[in-house]
Image (cartoon, rainbow, N blue to C red; front, top):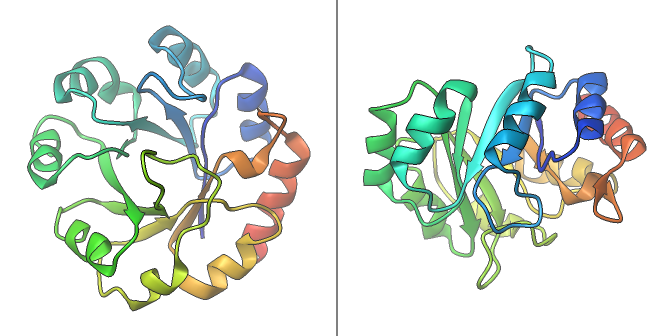
Length: 204
């Protein structure tokens, strides 16, 4: 079971991540979101991160050229969390060496099955919310995920926390889980919640 801790913004966050060693550390690299980090801030945080933890850059409708020219050489994974389509994803694959994940805001079975044909290395199945690209704290519709027929590996995101992650994993059997708000207190990453979350997920 892979674990991604996302929305890292402070040196303290990197310290927590280095202590508990998830598989992936996520940075929101498109602007305008509450956990967004600027380019220089990202470079500082990334340089502090343990080299065994894979770096994930989260982008929302970002121009392809900016991702390829500014960020790709610092990332292991590019996560597309906006309205990017198959042609965008394939064009990006042609110019970067990173794995590419595509987030799906799950509303209908067809949302997942259509994204399955994009050629992503991983899908990230998140909750659907009107007018939002994620980070809502809502859980995904597990009944839709269970009915969908798809072959791309997937990470489960959306409203996960220490109280519900075990049930979520047992319900939909994801390849990994992605958490941000569920390991925060008052909007900041919480060491004890990270410790507890990692212990639960590693034991499932």
